[in-house]
Every structure is written in C-alpha cells, then in structure tokens.
Length: 93
Image (cartoon, rainbow, N blue to C red; front, top):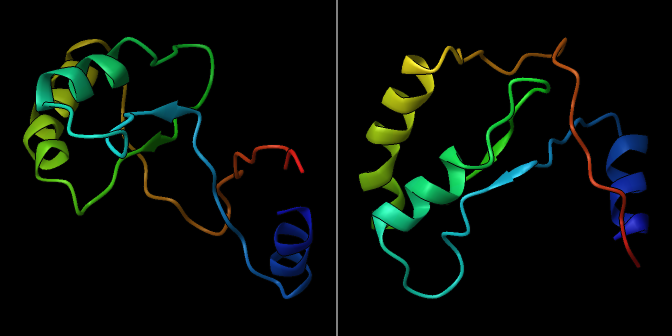
C-alpha cells in the first residue's frame, strides 16, 4: 500500500481517504445502522470525510437522513477541489 500511495502521488494525482466509516461494506447491515455509524462519528473539531459505497442500497436509503442530521447539527458540505486538503491514512504494511 505504501508503494501504491507513493506512486499515485509521484504521478501527480491526489487521493482522499476517509475518517468516518459508515461500515456499509461489512455484511448486510441496514440503513439505520449505517446512519448511526456515520452520525455517531462525526466531529465538530475536524473535517469529516465519510466513506459510503454507492453500490449499497442501504447506503442510499441512509444518506438522506445523514444529510438532514448533519445540517440540523451545524455541519456543512463542500465540494472537493484541487485546493482541498486531503485526509490520508498512514499505510500499515
């Protein structure tokens, strides 16, 4: 993973990791659990990068409620641009 991450950066690409995991890729969990996984892990002290998979119907069902929750609790959404500071994991291999 370290090699791949460095290779991507050396080729001039930018990539973004996440710091809030919906855990929608773990088995067959429902939209309510996905909602809880996201909303309970949002932080007001850092930028939140939420991992959700667009191939999961449960994620799509949870998204509307997650957005509503976030807006009601003072979070806002921004477009990722070239100027956005990326969040990256430290590769653990």
